[in-house]
Length: 197
Ligand SMILES: Nc1nc2c(ncn2[C@@H]2O[C@H](COP(=O)(O)OP(=O)(O)OP(=O)(O)O)[C@@H](O)[C@H]2O)c(=O)[nH]1
Image 1 (cartoon, rainbow, N blue to C red):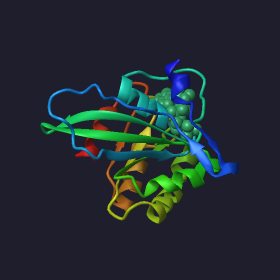
Image 2: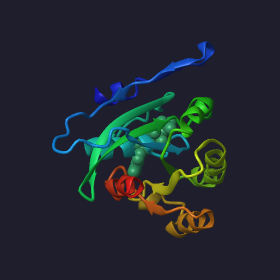
Image 3: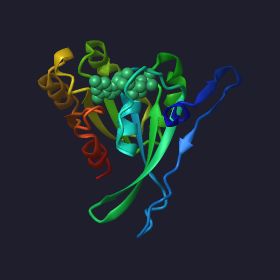
């Protein structure tokens, strides 16, 4: 049910407008977080696991089963405590499909950080990272924090992109890199913490 709600975004490009569904987590206590949230955007090819990564980070669950592509853009809020400071993250989950690209472009400029994902079991998603970085360069703020993530790392039997290849590409573009798994939870919290820091 939550899964369906989370995927309830839609776009009506013919009318030049769009709707998205967001989910606020206002249940934090103690010190109030900073008023303007820190905005993190998840980008990368369709099917690399952006939604699953976000759901794991937010709810600690993995969305197994049939794959329903994100439509347009969606967001969730989460408050993290980093070095004793409460940080409110607003996390934008973008559709990887080409047809929604013009929608997501409009959100790049407000992003403080971008988590750029490829799928270690899908070579094309890795090969497309250069194009994604060109797009980021074109539409995002100059000082945006970018981190490259090789997702589905637990899927060793189907792996076609070596960890070293990811490291090399990240080094070439001067961005931090780690492998993640939305399925096992590997480095999920760490990736969000790292960009928030
Ligand atoms: N084995 C494995 N499968 C994963 C992982 N993350 C996501 N998947 C699967 O990959 C498929 C796509 O995941 P999504 O999170 O919907 O992909 P997405 O990047 O949000 O796709 P778009 O919304 O089209 O941009 C789903 O079938 C997931 O179950 C992972 O870490 N390991």
